[in-house]
Length: 169
Image (tube, rainbow, N blue to C red; front, side, top):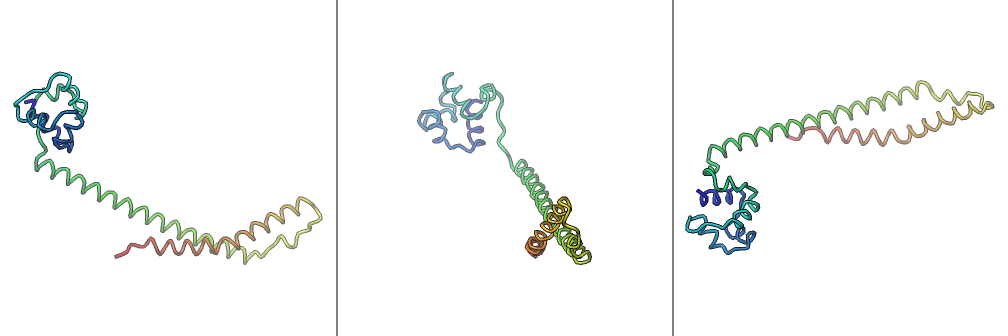
């Protein structure tokens, strides 16, 4: 029972006999003898095996560990397939959200440009002898200047982003 458990757990952890032997500071033949049931590790080595394989000693000494069978692999494959589908759906959803966000950004920029053209620059006709009006006029002019300079770059970037988010067939 101990021999079968050591072998099953070692294999489930993806370790060769040599790798386990190196971790336990024993020779590979010792591991082989334990797995064949020709010898038994002493209590100190049993604790080391337990720590190395990250398994309680009671499990090593207890019932037989079932190796994963074909049915287990099929179940794992099915779960992985479901996870992959979910990830693909999330990616598609994120792309769609990004695309529509970029479309809305383009529409907002176009609307802001239309509003600026319709309104003109009303602050140019203000009386700038009052300091508060002058500061407010300069602030409006600065925002308009910044928008007119930055919006085309943002608009071009958004349009490129929209084209890049379309699904390639």
